[in-house]
Structure formats: C-alpha cells, structure tokens
Image (cartoon, rainbow, N blue to C red; front, side, top):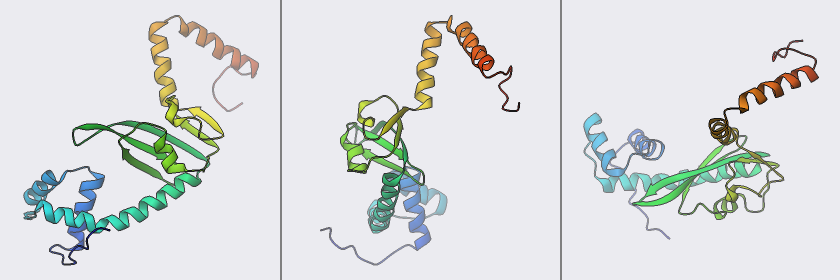
Length: 188
C-alpha cells in the first residue's frame, strides 16, 4: 500500500492538469517540466511537488487506462505495433494497440508475447493486424499483415528487382480486362 499523500495543494487544478498533460502526453521529464513552468509561467515548483501532482493523478489515469484496455479487448479488429523506447538508459518497448474505440500505449521491458497476453488475457479478436513479428501473431482468429509493413517489403523488392514494374502493369491490365473495364474508376 502506498503512503497517503498530503491532501494540501499548493497549485490549482488547472496547473495540475497542465503538469499531467505535459508530462504524460508531451513526454516532458520532471527536470525539464520544472524549467518550462518557470520560464513560461513564472512558477517556482520543485520536482517533488511535480511528483506529488502526478501521484495524485494516478488513480484517475489508471481507471481510464482500464477502460481503454477493456475497449481494446472487446474490439473485433485490433492493430498493434511496438518500437524501442529508452527508460533509465535501457531499451524497453512501447507497444500500441488500436481497437474500434480506443488506443492503448504501454511501455514494457519486453518485446515478447507476454505484453499482448497481459492486454488480452483469454480474449481473442476476430482479426489482428500487425507486422510479421511473432509476438503479435496467433492471438486472433485471423491475422493480416499491416499495409505499411507490407508496402515497405514491396519497396525493398522493387529496388532489388526493377523488372517487376512491367509485370505489375500487365497484372493490373489483366484484372481490369477480367472485370470488363479499362479504368480504375468505380463508375461504370
């Protein structure tokens, strides 16, 4: 159990809301946040006071994170990706999960399958869209490769095989011919 913080507030709710926003949404660290508040607003605030403000906000943020997690978990289609993030000088992983009504960002020390399992538990979306990384596959009824990752692979293939353009052109015209059209327009 965490110790109860003093309920005294030296700053109003609007300043506290700004501190929470700047720290979490804009990723401004405490030292820099203290300087920004001093330079822009003339506020003299210690890193300890900033930490207390963030600690008071934690229960509300955790409740909202749980709501978002439940929305992602209930989504029929889920998209996910992960990228490296530096935490205390070490590489951790920022994960993003996108569902029909929410986006969840998590930073975890692992890139492994434990993170999707933490988010979804026994829930299984109908479709999972991601890159080909194994930790993001196998947790849905069907899997689809992310278009951006697929295009990135195609760009690489095109660079190493310039003869692919005539074949793509021929393939496209054959599809148009099979559909009895000579244009990509949907109007017929």
